[in-house]
Image (cartoon, rainbow, N blue to C red):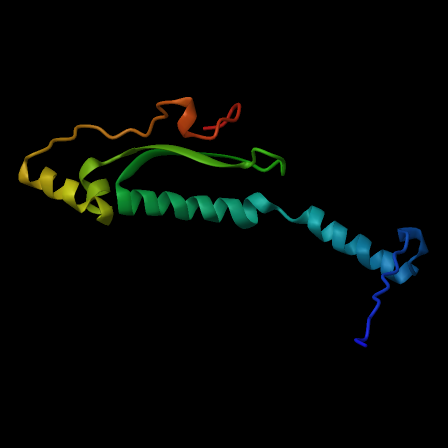
Length: 128
């Protein structure tokens, strides 16, 4: 007959913990509250994002918006203008289009990112 094992998990109320353990948890919570996500994470991330958009895709007038409320809808969005030649030359999967542009078969004056229908994007109030 196979052996059976039982795992017993004991839970405690915070007030039942030793004072030393309670102080340790208070200290860990304080460290979390002192953490500045914007300075430690978001700002360097956005700066790197700006640099890559400018260098790789010829982006200008980049505006990044984000929400750090830690709720549904949190996230980041951006708007920008792109240099057509720089953008297309760095999109390898658009090589045929780039070849047509270079040969004069096509001409593009402007590139904009727009939403064209409610069925093709996640819709959430006040988001981009």
